Image (tube, rainbow, N blue to C red; front, side, top):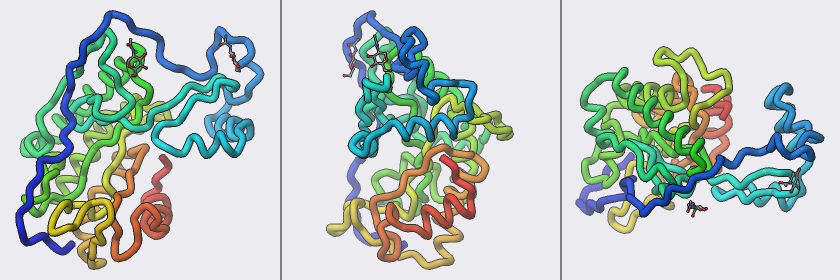
Length: 293
Ligand SMILES: *[C@@H]1O[C@H](CO)[C@@H](O)[C@H](O)[C@H]1NC(C)=O
Ligand SMILES: *[C@@H]1O[C@H](CO)[C@@H](O)[C@H](O)[C@H]1NC(C)=O
């Protein structure tokens, strides 16, 4: 990617834990298929003995076109006639469960969560097991918050594994730094820990503790420079630089971390918006790397 030449460093979105006034009230998490409601028993998607794929296929057959469309944003509304609660896809957990997204609420008996150091510092330990244990603690706290009825989602938009080569990029402290191999190792450890996998990666057998997300896919490492903003800039990256620099962390995050989420970036890659890039999303992530999230 062409490097910015002038400084315009803006402190950027840093997930901070906001301490909100809290009450002692808490409630049950918003589960589908409420077993105390006999009318949910008629639905095949509520039958936990069936494989997940069959349950999903059944659920989709019940949805109208309007309901399907309503589920496409990050705030998926409830579908009361099927007993399906709403879902907030956006939560943050970069260095601790945060309420910067929409899914986590610190207004119950849990007023906050552990805030670990910024990633650029944690990464400097070069300690993959430490990274794993931090991810593990974050995943456990996320589950506890959910089980306490203070979460409307368990999908967390972390880790940020964009390569940090130019210190003028205002979000560098969110990342493990400039080395593609190191960023990849960080991604594997964090994702395994957060999702409930073992350190060596035996797999979660489909039962995630929480869901991690490799972001921002890809070549997104620039913002607010000479009128360039992250929402639309075109990252011009050679095939070699893509292979050597920008893709390795994402490849590791998917292949070895088995991340259940990927966030495409806002920018274009060589003229194609990454979120509409068949080559990137379908051929590379799903095809070559086996992404199945
Ligand atoms: C029971 O579930 C059905 C959907 O299957 C829903 O329409 C109904 O409102 C639920 N009843 C209660 C008391 O929650
Ligand atoms: C906490 O905040 C959420 C989101 O605004 C709200 O739905 C929920 O009812 C609140 N819970 C309490 C106990 O105030």
